Picture (cartoon, rainbow, N blue to C red):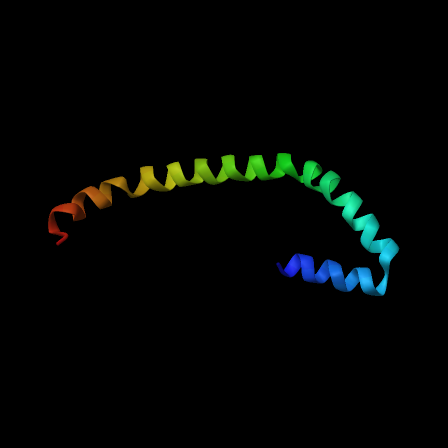
Length: 66
């Protein structure tokens, strides 16, 4: 919602730039898509490493949890 409001304000002040931003947005999204995929993969790998390191501690603490 905030993005739409900012775009409307930009459209009022400088409509050619707003139209250019509207046209360029899908191309920028496509350009950044591989970085998002790599980010998800790296986050998953780091989460697996974290869980593997903390598993012994969680197993030792499990019987004492209520």
